Length: 238
Image 1 (cartoon, helix red, strand yellow):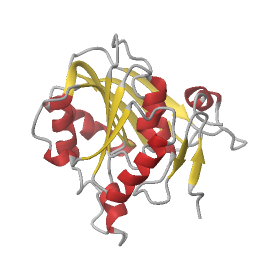
Image 2 (tube, one colour):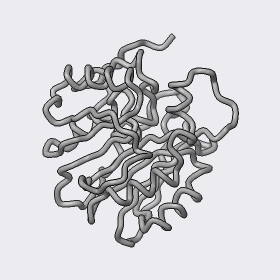
Image 3 (cartoon, one colour):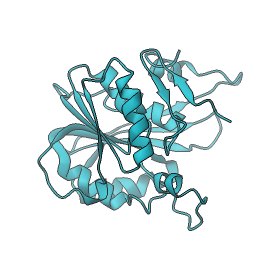
Image 4 (tube, helix red, strand yellow):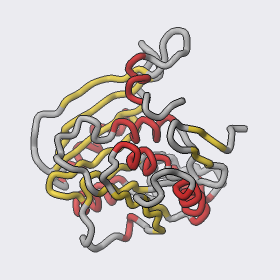
């Protein structure tokens, strides 16, 4: 059984009641999102499907000037995210809110950075745990709705960052283009050299510009974190 607590350098995450546990995908996105940004000032961030609050806390650490809205629909996750935020040094900057991103229909808030580790399993079979299934399957937040709402809520120079399965990347990029969100940065992620890519980190903006493309290998032949992965996460992992 995984530990109910995950310790980082500046905060601790309890995730035993959260619909989504602390995992590599969330850590990657929290460390990678907007890390090459030329946006003058990221003053507002939105974490869609915050779960335990991991990504919101990572963004709060990285962008000291920003306020972060962390939204979710699961009550147990929201309660635990709030507890994690309250126990952190960033409690005054993060606002944990029960909100269904599917049903957002106003544009009162504009965000400089929108980040999401979205549900991506499309299989018809579910695991039997209703809360966890909702967090993991696209039926709870279709990519089309995620992209459409993100486009409306993004500021003029804002950045939309996601991590999705490698095989979904081309379709996701096309869907974003239909909403006038254009790829500016891509990193394909694999566990080890010579293994197939499993995840893709993608970043979009409203302005067309040349897109960078890189790869990231997580582990070396001795099962240690690679230099590249270590450098990306050095401010978080103990």
